[in-house]
Image (cartoon, rainbow, N blue to C red; front, side, top):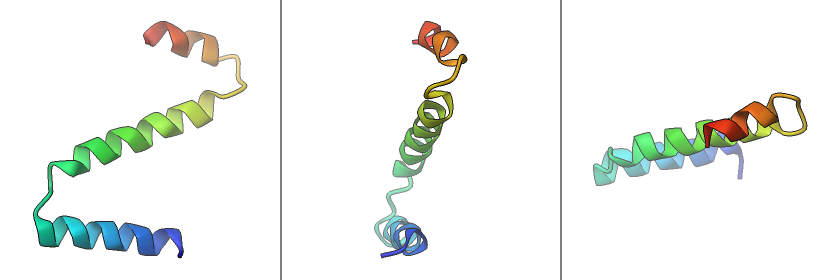
Length: 52
């Protein structure tokens, strides 16, 4: 199963079930995951810990 098919299936789920409140949660989790991956092993990681 490709990543695009997962996104399409999720989009269809949101449209059919009218679960639009899930969108900000998913966006926040994706951004948080991207932040963790981007700062892993870098000198920037010490400054990120101060935020939390």
